[in-house]
Length: 112
Image 1 (spheres, rainbow, N blue to C red):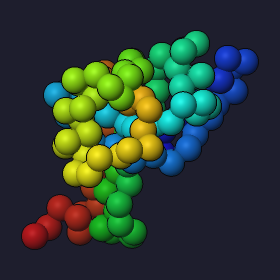
Image 2 (image 1 turned 120 degrees about the vertical axis):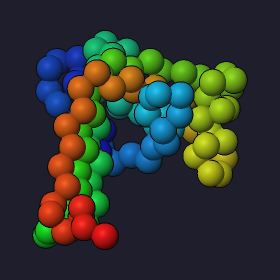
Image 3 (image 1 turned 90 degrees about the vertical axis):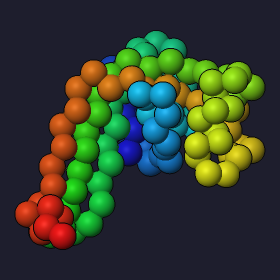
Image 4 (image 1 turned 180 degrees about the vertical axis):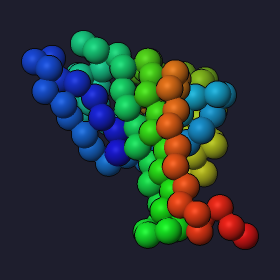
């Protein structure tokens, strides 16, 4: 889930896909997305990634500045290759550089 801030200060959160590349998190996006308009005004975002339930639950929260990168750039193309398949629908990529990371793993998730 990616959280951004609207121009009037209200929060906006929406599901997203992502890939880790070059010490950043890259998130594909489409033209006209609310998140892109939000980041044009306030280029900072929070990302929450969760998996599992109960004692097997794991979570990471990352916060940091963002840069919107046109999908036609070399950097975005490199992120797209790491994505595993070409997201032809993506017109832009959001590059989130984590400045703060909080993670949690339930006890069962840590055991082999």
